Amino acid sequence: MKMNEKAVSEAVGFVLILGIVISGIGLVTLYGYPVLVKEQSNTDVKNMERAMIVIQNDMKSLCFKNVPYKETSLQVSGGTFEVINATQYGGFINVTNGTPAFQKNYTIGALTYRSDRGTGVTTLENGAVMIRQEGATGSAMLAERGGSMTTPRIRSSFTS
Image (cartoon, rainbow, N blue to C red):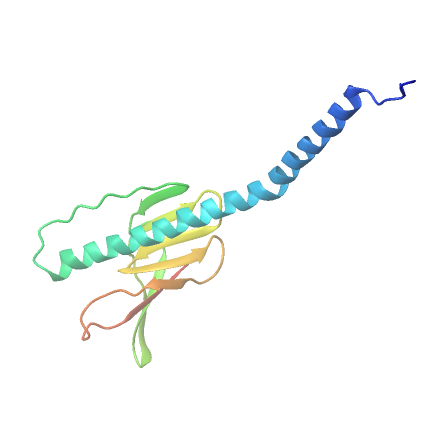
C-alpha cells in the first residue's frame, strides 16, 4: 500500500488560523471599541445628570427648610466639573408675567460638567438643571427649579 505524500504544510494552516484570529480582533476593535467608548461617555453624563439633581435637591433643603448644612459626595468621571463665578458666567434672564416686562443682563454663577469624550454639558444654573451640546445654541431643562408658587418664573438660557 502506497501513502499519498502530497500534503499541505502545517505552516500554511497556522497562517490561515492566525489570519482569521487577527481579522476577528481587528473587526471587534474597529466596530466594537467606539461603541463601548460612546456608551461609557453616555453613562458618565447620565451619572452627572443624577448628581446635579442631587445637588439641586440639597440646595432646596438648605434654602427652604431649617437644615443648617448638607453634605454631598460626588464622583466625577469622564469629564470636568467646574464652578463658574458669577462675574465670568454670561447669561440673560427674562422675568415674565405673561408678557416680557423686564429683560436685563443678570450675573449668575453655575456648576458645569463637560464630558471629555462627548459634547454633552450639564449645568446647574439658577436652581435648574439643564443639558445641552457643546457649541450648540439653546438647552433643555432636565429638572425645573423649585420654589414657591408665588415666586416669579425665571427663564434662563446659555450664551456661548
